Image (cartoon, rainbow, N blue to C red; front, side, top):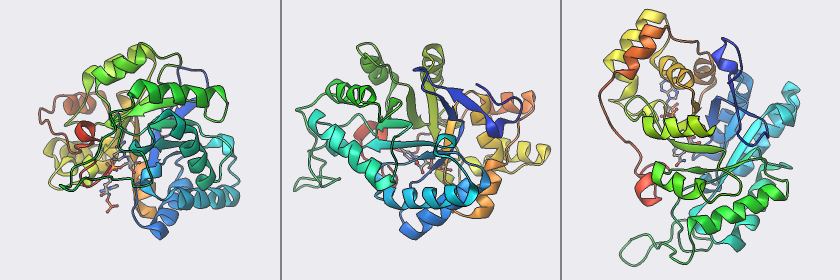
Length: 309
Ligand SMILES: NC(=O)c1ccc[n+]([C@@H]2O[C@H](COP(=O)([O-])OP(=O)(O)OC[C@H]3O[C@@H](n4cnc5c(N)ncnc54)[C@H](OP(=O)(O)O)[C@@H]3O)[C@@H](O)[C@H]2O)c1
């Protein structure tokens, strides 16, 4: 980690020497195209320098447009931002990986990506239909390809220099191990749901031991209510330290050594979610002692993300 005591500027070293990931990340899972553009611009203006995208979100073009405009307006260089996108489940066959990557890069209007992730470990029937279903409405999986086959194609992308780091998303520790051990290029990042109700401690410990960045999505519990934003422990700490519950949850995530993704949609929330400061140790430990356990997103079990992927 770097960034001294200002946790807003914390950056985490990637294990392949390709650079550092800003711990505070902005997620672009926003269904509306116009809202994607304004929210991305707002995030950049508020100070976010890490942007998480995916071909599945169908808005890479809008995110790219917002980034180009925002960077030009703010005098921000490409090297000052960190951009990730993800390979969708229908593109797991090795011959589909590079075309999918190139298509994402083109939509984003970028020359290279800082990070490319396999979005989920589940391969779906290859093709243009992102959500292939049979007559009963069940997902059509693809049994002809293994996750390691896909990983080998991801490694080839790094060799060609257009993608600085690669990683996995929506995995368990077992799946991570199945790739980590045979990998020629080790995963640099894993992106998973994590918050005080789902601390994923074992996975986090493994990641720390191997220098893999643990990137938490749903740090605010997807904003669901009732939920983390109304948790009595979080609310009491927020009142005590003069911050909002969202700021407390984001600070906790950074202080435990993870990067995070949050999706504020308005300018005011972008400023709020960026304006975090370190929690006192007793508050940090109190959050660690929360006993509630809840997974909000089923994507890790099926490759399909309930209301969100
Ligand atoms: N790998 C995967 O499968 C996967 C799955 C899900 C998400 N992600 C990534 O993670 C990103 C983050 O998504 P998330 O849902 O996990 O983000 P989140 O920040 O935990 O939750 C977003 C929700 O919180 C609300 N919110 C944001 N800031 C707030 C604040 N300051 N106070 C109160 N409520 C606030 C938002 O409400 P409003 O919309 O009303 O502002 C929204 O409903 C996504 O954009 C995506 O990049 C990845």
